[in-house]
Length: 228
Image 1 (cartoon, rainbow, N blue to C red):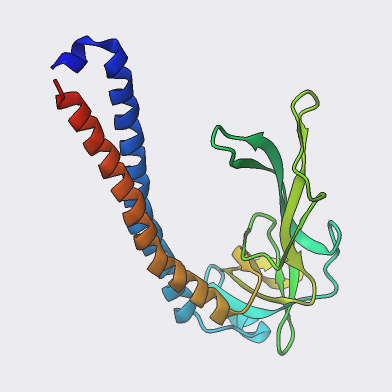
Image 2 (tube, helix red, strand yellow):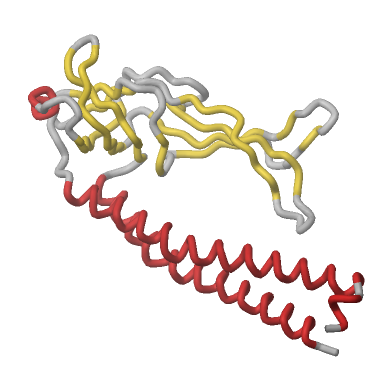
């Protein structure tokens, strides 16, 4: 084929092939793996009934537990009114003008969750924040100073007094049983389940769109390659 002997035509073929493959792979992952993961998370939360403080205290170590309540006012604010947060820094824009953000700080200290009766201590500091209560950004204009390596910061975090749900396993703490949380969600159990179900429904659609773009790009590449 003429394209194989013409470097000027070979480069676009390689670019189309790579872009098509990337879009196709992302589409497949989102449409299958991400959708199934979200569905499994919803199933897990539905299977786990909210446990009381007494039930957690009586549970064997290592048992998976879900607790639902509100973040206690006794939790110390770490930044503004966030008792736990992740911070991202603006790192400029890509070639398409899309903003690039990179996580540069994660503050997830142990938290106290007030339940209907009693309270539960989340004892670890490596949980994942899912569905933050609020966000905050430095100013309205995005700035990146490459010389100083500093950019606009934005925060996503959890706020005391707001509803929260956590899933984890029971472990023994300094003052009795506590929760080693895998994730802390800024909302109710019902809201978490609904969010995961929505993700499971929409991911295949998004995956199909991206996969279709990938197939289209690969098809264009094949046509260009076969053109004489």
